[in-house]
Amino acid sequence: MKINVPKSVDWIINRLEEKGYEAYAVGGCVRDSVMGKEPHDWDICTSALPDETLSVLGMENIIENGIKHGTVTIRVDGENYEITTFRTDGEYTDNRHPESVTFVRDLREDLSRRDFTVNALAYNKQRGLQDYFQGVGDIENKVIRCVGSPDRRFGEDALRILRALRFSSVLGFDIEKRTAKSIHKNAYLLKNISKERIMSELIKILQGENVEAVLLGYPDVIAEIVPEIKPMIGFEQHNPHHVYDVWTHTVKVVSGIRAEKKLRLAALFHDIGKPAKFTVDENGTGHFHGHPELSADIAEVVLRRLKSDNKTISDVCKLIRLHDIRPFVRKSIRRLMAKSGMELFPELLELKRADAKAQNESYIKETLEYIDFLETMYYKEREENNDFTLKMLKINGQDLKDIGIKNGREIGYCLNQLLMKVIDEEIENKKENLLEYAEKMDKNICKS
Image (tube, rainbow, N blue to C red; front, side, top):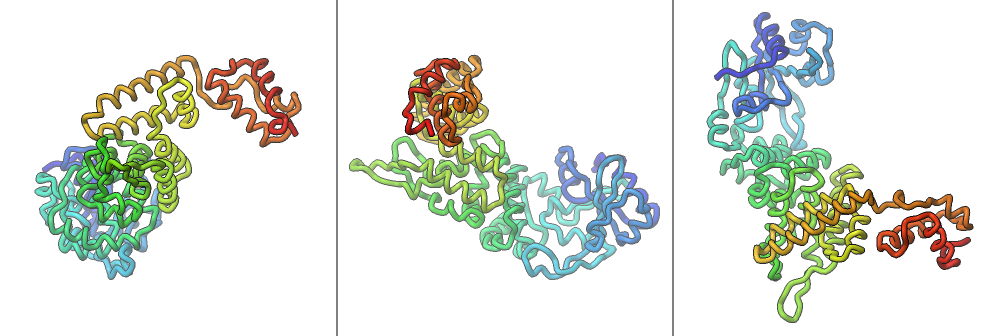
């Protein structure tokens, strides 16, 4: 099998080979090449020790970070390439990092410590593809399988548990039975992984095309990193609009929405508050009044714990809080647009659509027609250049100061009240109209 290696990678490999060392492209770049995909990064492994690599390649354009662990980084043609000496790992005491590494000269020994067979592949033009653990066969059969003992691999680095789910989600591969069993068995080890790494892998899992199968097959693993989902699993809704339990419905919404980070996070958390809000009426029908607000609150706690950025948290929580509101008249629709913001409103509609499609088919057509109506209203407001923020008002805080409203908090209150009146079409958005109304407002509220 021939792989198209970039000229820079080929140059590095040839330089090391010319000096008597073995060198290969290794890992994910080879896997992607075998699958016919364009690799994002190219990593290189070599029998040369770090000092020998430095001697062969010279010190120019060398980044020495990581040398004590056997990695030399070189910049060639504007790209960084990591060159790592063949090694074996010492004991893992924290389920993440080896206490020590031992450099070796044998490629197979190095590949035997890697996570999955599909990543334990190496290639150079002279020797061709090196596949000691049937990784190509697993690629052809679309299987994720640990190299050697799954328990040992996951005990060494618990993050591999989430990496297995991520590869299954992104590549559309099944997880081999022994590896899957070990994932369920060792999921508790994820408590030793940093929140930042967990968040990074979770987002990649959520954005995969095979996410539905992964979330339905491994809810216990997701519950290890987000314990708040546990009550959702198997929680029946007892409502004619729903044919799935809360977790299955949630998974259907995740897989049915565009694979964008905040949308898939919003989908994952949009009903997380339902179990706590469950009530049953006299007819035995289940209800979840107030669940969007609680779901948004829970989502914020989880996302902050997982070190998400503030913008993502704000947008996700806003989408969740508003996802179940169903306005019908123009005034109410405009208020919803004001609450979401015009930029986020189309994504709110995406969440509503995915939510509807994951419910009882008997109600889907009617609900989707309603969402189409909301979308039509949105574009109508856009055409009229309405954004429903304070910026659209024809007056500002200084104008209110000029008529005697001095306190900053009172100015803010007045401006927001005026905005609502404009949105409700009770006042025309003209300066004189707005100031006239402001002057008539309760003096105890609007004046110092």
